[in-house]
Structure formats: C-alpha cells, structure tokens
Image (tube, rainbow, N blue to C red; front, top):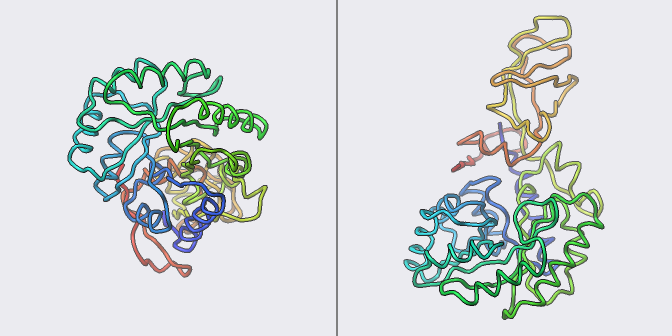
Length: 338
C-alpha cells in the first residue's frame, strides 16, 4: 500500500481552507492515521489541535509533540486518567479535553483529577446514537454535577452527527447542540462536532452560533474510492478530495477460467465498509486473510492495483507506508503508531 503525496497534500490543504473560510477551529481526528508525519502536516496547515479516541492514542500524540488534544470519547479508565492528570501537572502548556455524558463519569473524573482540572465537553447524543446524554435535561444535570465537584471544568458541548442519515436529521441535531450551549454558563464555549460526512451542513447551520465551533473530521486526510467517495460533502458543494491510497498485489493463481487469486487479503486492506475497488477490468468477489478472489482475465504474476474503502481501517494495517510522487518514486515514509 502506498500513499500518494499530491493527494495527501491536496486533502490537508482543502480541509484547512474550508474550516478557515467558515470560521471554524479544526482538530482533525488523528485516530485515522496515528502518524507523526501526517500530524505535523495537519498542524502546519493550521489545525487548532488534534483529536483521538483513547488515552493511549493521546499518549502517542504527546510523543509526536502535540500540545493540544481532544479525546472524542468518555474517559474512565484509571491508568489513562492518572497519566492525563500527571501530564497536565508536568506541562503547564499542555491542553487536553474529553467528553462526559453522565453524573457517574463526572464523579470518576473528579476522583482522579490532579493539580489542574480536567476540561470536559458535555456530550449531547441522539436516539440510536452512541455516547451522549439523550436529553437536554440529562446534559444539564451532568453540567451541574461538574460545577459541584472539584477537578472538573466544563468548557463546552460536543456531539457526533455522523450516524444520522439525512441533512434534515443533522440540522435538527445541530440545533439541539446550539440550544445546549446557550444553557451553559461558560465563557467563550466550544461546540465540537464530527464532520466527515456533513461538514457542509455544519458550515451553514452553525455559522451564527456564539460558540467556537470545532470540527473533528478525520477520514478526509486520505479519502478513499468507496465509502467516503460516496458520502463526502464535496458531492454537494464545490471542492474535492482525492483518494490517496493505492494497494498493489500480484496474481498468484488462475485456477479456473475468469477466476484469479490475488496475494492481498484482510491483513492488508480494509473490508469493513466495502471491499477494495479494482483499478482495472476485474471484479472483487471476496477477501480472505491473505487472498482476494477476483473475476477477470488476468495472468499469473501480473501486478494489479486497488483503491480502498474506509481509511480508518487501512492505516492501522501498516506500520510504514511509502509516500510516492506522481511517477511512483518513493519520496518519504508515513509511519503509524497504533
């Protein structure tokens, strides 16, 4: 699997421009790539911070030298909280914030807080979603609890709209997030949203909010030829993202007419949100651990290539990825730390 340099640079510049032009802070989701090289490119392009999903991922980013981290998740494990409290005490310049959605989680945070309080975003969810208080009343109980215990400071509201199916559902949800912000007694509050599939709606609906809007999109960085190609907001608004991944493999066997076995499998390419996309006149039938079965007229030993679907489960399969120029010269490496 290779990463095309021009596509990677284009995608990073495109989203940096979009968020800047819409007056949003950008904390791209580094769980997608977990790469110090890409993290540096995103920060150099103007990212306000970087987002992860777990304390261990936050620890990796600290190793990259990242000074502002958003953990877009609830954090309750003692080891992670002890490390975060110690890191906040060790480095006065370090900023980290994460989500809370229950009184119980606030109490856990308070019991592990150190010299500096844990900064949190009260998460408002939606029916059928993942984390997040399900009602404004529940969220305000969480906020009230945080103000009553030591070591926890609410700095805004967070949500995730990526599992919603329509623009109308997203608009309704974004309005509920805005309502929640208005109830906070917080100076200069943050309003954090996901953004990979609906950043055009977010850009329109939240432009007038009084909060600082912080986008956390992540998959944009490499884009893909499948899941996100179909769902990118740039299908609805001017602009584009470019697939940055390409994976090569040889034809190992042609055991039946029109059937070929490729030396690439589930250990090499993602399959959870769609099978790899052939770059050639053949069709992927199924994937196994080390093999992909295709239909088409191919020769044993032939080198074929594929695009991928879902970058979040592509980066994590490779510790080192060649970064290539347009002529496929290797110009660098992308290293991952999963």
